[in-house]
Length: 522
Image (cartoon, rainbow, N blue to C red; front, side, top):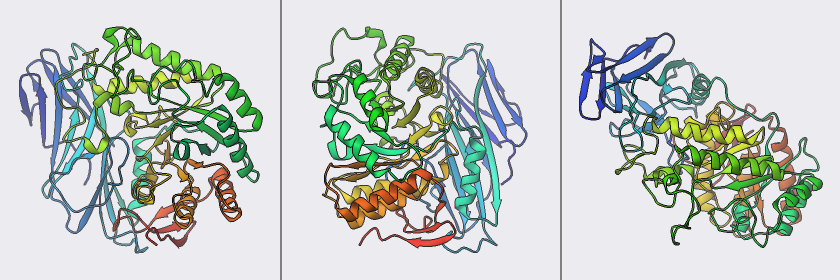
C-alpha cells in the first residue's frame, strides 16, 4: 500500500467528536497533513481539550498474509505473527507479509510496513481488517484530555513502506531504521554481568567485588572492558527509595565503584526513580511535597512535575559522581500507569487520573522524563527496563525489550528470552541496543538448556549479560562462558530467525549465512 492521505479522520475532543473527510477543520481547531515520503500530522484545538485522533485508510487486505505488531513496552513472550484479527491492537508499527522466512526463496515475497517515527508526541497503535488500515493516536494527558491552548501539536510522523523479494525480517529491520534514523548508540560493545538472576536482591559490597573478578576472568580473551551492573538490593529499601546511600551491606557506594574499576570492569547501577513506598507498606511521610505525587497512586511520583524531574536529575548526577558509568532505570511505565504491558487493554491509560501538567500529552511527559535522565547522566550509558521503546529510542542507549528471564525456571527463560530476542532483534542498533535480558546461572536450570540460551544471546550482536552464582560452573561450563563472552565482546556476528513466522520461540536461525538449529524443548 502506498502512503496517501487517510480517507477518514476522526478527532475526539473533550466534549465532541468530529468526523472529517473533505475539510480537516472543526470548531476551534484543525488537523493538518504534510505528505511527502512520510505523513506529518499536526493538531490544533483552542476551545476544547484533545483525546484521540483516528486515521483510516480504506484498502483491501491481500490474501494469505500474516501480521506482526510491536508492544507498548517490553514483550511478554507474546510477540508473534498472526492471521487477521480486527480487534488486535498493535502498538507503534505493523508488518503484513506473505510466505515464510523459513523458505529462503524470496522471489514472490512482499512485506508491507506501517509505523510512526520514534519519539512521537502521541501513543500510537494500529488496527487492521480485511477492508481498512487504522491508526489511533492517543493524545490524552493520562486518562483526561490535554489542553493545547494556542499551541499546534506535532502528533506523529507516519511511514508506509513496501519491501519486495526479501525476507520479512530484513524488511522490518530496514523499516526500523526508517522509523529511527538517528539512534543513540554506545561507542563500544556493552556486555558483562548483572547480579540479579542469582542474587535476587541479596548481595553485598564484597560479593559485587567477587562478581567483578569473576566477569573479568571470563573476559581474558575479550576485546573490550566488561560491565558489572549492581541490580536491586544495594539501597536501604528493596525496590524502593531512597537512592542517596547504600544499606549496611553496601556502606560506601563511591568506594565500591572505585574498587570495581581497579579490578578492570565498568561499574553500573540500578534505580527505580518514581516510587516512594512499597505496596505492602505505608508511604514514607514528608519525603517529598504532596504535589509531587501522582493522582493515580499516592506512592508514585508524577514525572510531569518540575520538582520530580529535578529529583530524578539530582539522583542521576549522584550516581555519576560516585563513579558509575551505566545506569539501569526500572519500573517507570508500571509506576506511571499502574499496569504491566500485558495488562494494557485498548489503551495504556485507563481510570480517572491525569498528570500535574495538563498542557502536555502523556507521550511528551514520558519523553521529558527520559531526556532528563540522559542529560543528567553526562555521558554515562542508559538502559531502560520497563521503558517504552518508541519513546526512548534516541534517548536511551539500550532498552530491555522483554520481561524477566530466570535463574530458576527454564520455561520462563524460553518464553521471555527467546521470544524477545527473535522478534525484537530487528530493533537492535536501529532504535537502541535491544537487550533481551540475562542468562541466569544458579544450578537450578539444566546446563543443556542454559548453554543454548547463552550461545544464542552471544551470537546476536545485542547486549549480553550473565548472572552467575559464584563458584558454581564446572570447568566445561566455564569454557562455554568464556567462549560466549569472547563472542559477545566483538558483536560481529549476524543472527536472523528463520521460523519466526510459525512459532513464538524460533529454533531455526541464519548465522553469518549458515543455518543453525536450537532445541529449546529437549
